[in-house]
Every structure is written in C-alpha cells, then in structure tokens.
Image 1 (cartoon, one colour):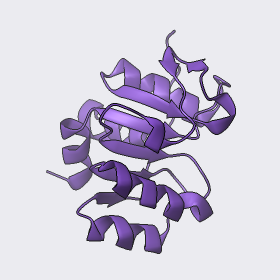
Image 2: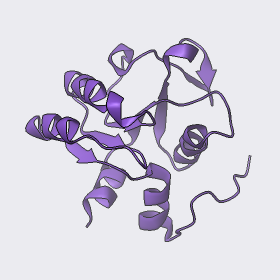
Image 3: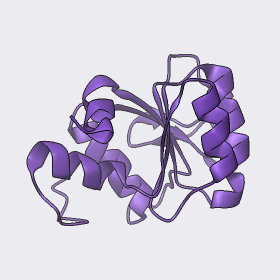
Image 4: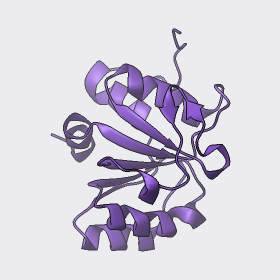
Length: 144
C-alpha cells in the first residue's frame, strides 16, 4: 500500500491550516470534500478565529485545538512550513501534509526526526480520489 493511501485510510482528524471563508477557494473546497468522505476537518485561520467554516469552529493555530489532530494539512506558503512543522511536533500529530506547490526540506527533516510522516506537493482531495475512488480530475462539481 502506498504511504499516502495508508495515511488517508488510517487517520481521520485533519487540522487544515489556511482554510478560507470563501467557498470558492481551493482550501474550502478540499475541506468540504474531505468532510463528505468522513474526515473530521478542523479549520485553522487566525483571521477567522472563533467563527465557523463548514460547521466547524475556526482556531487561530493548531496548538489551540483541544482534540487530537492526526494530519496537519497546510494551505500556506512554503516559507511558513517550518513554523507549522514545529507546532505539528508540539501537538504530536502523525502527519504533516503540505498541499500542491508547498515544500520545505527543513520542515521535512524536523518532522521525520520526530517520527511524523511528511507529504509535500500533494492535494489531500486529489489523493483521496486517486486511491479510494479511482478518479483523477482535480475539481469535479461539488454537490451541495
């Protein structure tokens, strides 16, 4: 089994950093999709702290989340990845997942040194489709 498939079948609680209140943004589309397939997605966005996105309370940072987070899914620029990796280690998450176009070799070294899996430059939604639904398209029409 591929590591990505293993991650998505084992871990079901995702802290999604950079989720927007704008329903047309990729982060929000991915959040809604992952919720539809049984994942608990906790949105993290300092500018929307305390509000709700897709029915979930928004947190300022992952270290504020009280429940156990397994995957930290990042929709932020690569330059922010290392700080997020430090917080990922602090909360004891199992996976640091950097979305398409995001990578940081120092963040990778830090999390792997702490026995945390590292995924970069991949979309959780696209990977879920590929491994579990055998689909490859990027953004099919979402049914509300």
